[in-house]
Amino acid sequence: MKNLKHLILLLFITLLFVLTSCKGEKLETIKVCASDVPHAEILEGVVKDILKEKGYNLEVTILDWQEQNAATVAKDYDANYFQHVPYLSIDESAKGLFAVVKVHYEPLGIYQGKEKELKNGKTFEICDDISNGIRAFQLLFNSGVLDKDLENENHNFPYTVDESNFTFNGSTWTSSNGIKVTLIPEDTLVASLKDYDFGLLPCNTALTGNISSATRVYVENDPNQVVVKANVLAARKNDYNNNANYRAKIDALADALLSSEVSNYVKEKYNGIIICDKQTQIDLR
Image: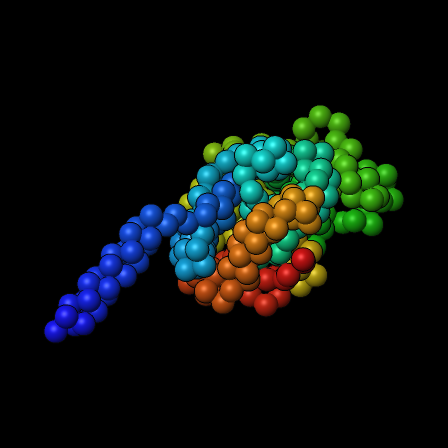
């Protein structure tokens, strides 16, 4: 009987110790800045739960895309999620960052403004940053709106040969056959769409602005484009190579973004408009 009492007391003390330890345990935090749609939604909607099971608390901050690289370099955040590799490679504020994994692709589309038929379009608005601007012109050429050979013959081409810089004179460029293309800040593309025949909107811009995919008359569909310009998780290269704790956090986050749970979430939530599968989920470590 005495031994039984000692056994019960020992079990009680052990249980009390375990409960106290669990109560005092804190999950390590991973801080990520991201664009609202779909990046932050993906992180909050599915990645957070995956990381919690691995012992991490994911803290997501929605931040203007023009500030995210600088904020990550400054160590305000562990990583960011908003851009593709071509933009990461030309952004001066991104020095020291690297692409960890590719996750999803947001196709650029041509959306109806004042006109319904693409052949009737004469005025087009596009995003005024270099990366999206070049994508827009490539889409205008691929859709047949612009004739690349005609522009080359007339030396009237809107960006340099290496596709690294615009050569616009002002905010509007006019093609040899009278097509007018106007540079518009990303945050006003949706509001100004009604002023142009068509607008070339990044996928997340259209989603955020509640622009229906039913009004999309043409969309990027080049498989190579999908791979090259899939959105990535970006982190600090030096810390990743030299700080074991930081590396473990980034690896856990990267593995979560490469999971089938993420691809299934994107497919269901965005009705196939955003591409996230084996062709976009690529490990770059």
